[in-house]
Length: 111
Length: 113
Image 1 (cartoon, rainbow over the protein chains, first blue to last red):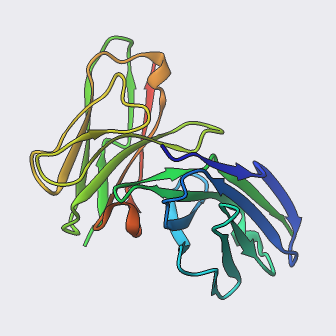
Image 2 (image 1 turned 180 degrees about the horizontal axis):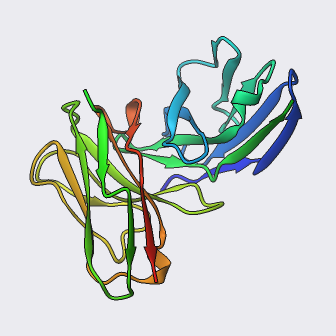
Image 3 (image 1 turned 90 degrees about the vertical axis):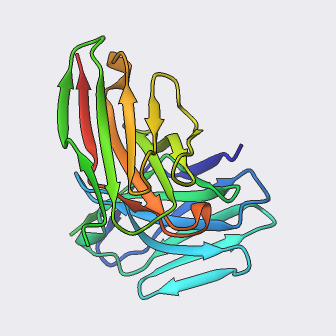
């Protein structure tokens, strides 16, 4: 089955700096890679996703890049703000039926 | 449009007791999922369903059973709870399996003593 590894497990940045979270996946057949944000005590919510026919996708301060050859994808957050503090999960689809999630990155943005 | 709801929000069980967690969605989604979330381990898939009347095992199915008698509901059962099942349980649903956004419920916090 699919295996998704996520790094780092914790990340602390100063407000205004950039943050990068990286994930690798094992199944070359995976073709959908979403990122979820989970604030403390809340449910995970999708923030951005990318499909295997695209190398990069941006949405305001958030971007995701995908390298299919190396089987890794990354989340980039620019101009970080305190409200970006949360746990971020990457995922890759397991066949067409389910997702496999990474273990999460706790991002702390220091004011 | 409530999205995905879960019942109960919090529950304390004694070892060996049984309980059922209910997930309901009003988005007419075919796919529904049960995850457990433990510190440092992300979201691990317990069971899932690809449509009414179907169920399938995920990554960590042992000790759990599920049923999908109605399209909008997905039930997770613990027949004999164990302390190792202390966790936060999330339900999710989507229209196209592993191809699009999963919408999560608010979670159920379960403590097994």
